[in-house]
Length: 313
Image 1: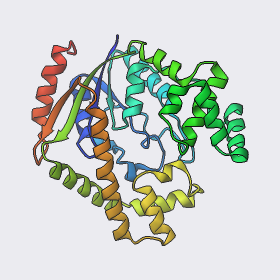
Image 2: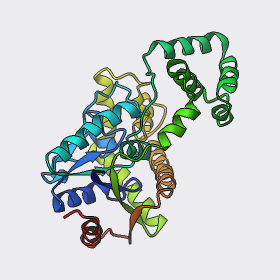
Image 3: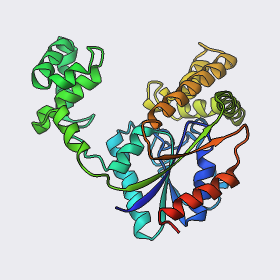
Image 4: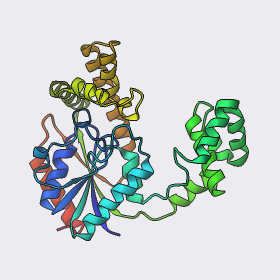
């Protein structure tokens, strides 16, 4: 299997800078694995790397979509995997950097996504049924077809119930059968994981808070206003992201800037906790724990020893 490097960790842990350092040391190129950095015109709120921060290292999957688009993990994975294969074909090292765990796992595994899409006929038919009949009848059908999947869902999980039925109707394979089969497929890439975190939770929280303050200084509110002025609907997926949703409330007059800032900090800290919970399931991660101030030079030296031992030189 081709080898790739994955730089992971919670938000504000220094992944961007460390990923660039790894790419420069090992003749690599960065592939962003961030579900929001794909959108054009959303650089402030997503902390997308600037040209200066990229330090001349090519970056992929940043600003590749219009903000009114809604991307599935399948669509993201297809495009990002094309970037990875192109980097490998040119003899370079793909360095995957980002905090969207589901997308990263799908890329490494080469997940075989089931049929169906948001604008497909089957999805439209199922959604129409729900509008007319409610979700309960569809849920009962799913319970009869795929009791294991139904047991993991609640009537409030409307999107997942529809998705499970869509998979069955289009493929004849239940979601449970599909998930079991895909888990048995060997990973597409041999991933070497480098994880960044802080020894102290307080230091991570402080760093997150500073990042939010910086986003506000850099013009997060003005970025939201520009997106709305360009015609982006207020209910667009992109505007539901942390930071954008809270400052949309400011623009609408239902929150003050101070209230929005505190809410963004809170939601960002909660998101970091969820990211770490996801990552800790992966026992293959080589963790680097920062003290109050990250020591990138020491971490790069340690990472170099790890990657050299893995045959990357």
